[in-house]
Length: 592
Image (cartoon, rainbow, N blue to C red):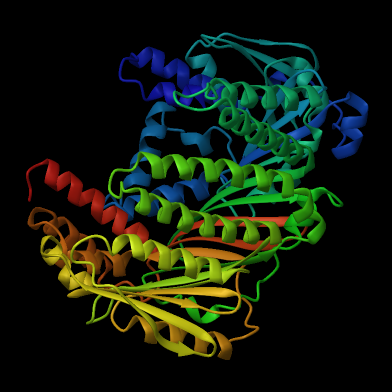
């Protein structure tokens, strides 16, 4: 890979470039005429038992041909439909017309790296789908690249900055940093590599429990050292506050250490799907059974949120998430929760003392009271270990944008008390219109409403926000509800009734999304004049896009022994990004 990158350096002469191409070819192939017949290596556990090496990680690319298709797709989106042909043409020129396939690379099979360890050092092993190294060796000879045949069919290649070793085994060619690494080479790495790229263009997997303990300790030590460097006592910070902050940091390090000991496998995979015209990055974590982490991950099944009606996948933005820690795990985390709350309380107190907006003793006391109520509610929620929250933002409305949200809170009266106390502070400012307490009620929910005209300085935002700001707070028996926008009370009522009708409907463990098309369309009327041409280009690119295919999304899915987190960009987002890139180029060139 270093050699490939080196080819792109403009300072390389043609001769040097040719030698680097030969190095790449050598890294892809080695001729059977230079290799002595060898017995096939054992696979899997047999290899590990025979050599003392364990596989701790693997990485794989789906193959040369699939990757070229990705380049072709990206080029089409960006307005360069010939990008893949150009890349292949450059490779052909650099390899004297052969191309990588002409050098023996099987373009349909994956290629990758297996990382092994003997407990003291790491041993990487490159795996390339090359059976016949003859063409590549011919190219190496033509460029006069130094090589030497060693024992057991190993070929030694002298690179400018290092020595590499190659060995052909069956239909594969292995690359290593030492001849001894071939002792653990599997006869066929295809099962390992294929498993990584069955859903991805690029996949990486780490078998965390096989990482030598000393390396785990080194990683933890580095993290601890980094944290300690930023833990100096701050000016004005009391010894008591400083000790509490140190205690919290130590608890976080201890928790991180426990997580490292309990994670079983970590998989990261990226895929560009030309058929569906989307891309996603997955992070999948599995934990050892009967551990705290394994217990926590077991709770991420399909959730049955009590607030399904507050989550609308067709809106501009939204989120939902529900989970419940087992009581025994919540109890184990109680000490850290209490430490976190204590530090937050002190930071809030300092913030109240430092603020200048409400600087009378009465105002500061009221702010303290409101903050105490909020932190009491937060502490009760954290101690219970239950999360249930949902929210939606609508932008495509003649009455302006709106927000409606709901959250489980075991002590909603604390939220209500904090709201009332804080509004008493706001009431000391001129122009504050006051709150309409108990403006309405619905199914046991008390609703309080605040309404005020949009400030003159915000008049330009009227197309997006409407001509006034209206916010309602709903207080139920074990939940709070917030709505902003025209007729905010009705927003809470409608979403609550919809939640009742959808009670028990399966929901993802968590999901956060945004519709790029809706957001851009809503921003257009309030954008600065100079930005509108570029925004219009993006809107034009999305004009023929199927409805509901312009989202960025972060979501979770339950898998065996763990959870998979996915970051996804749908086809409309890719087209919007391509259009934005073109617009930026035109703007830089003075096209707007």
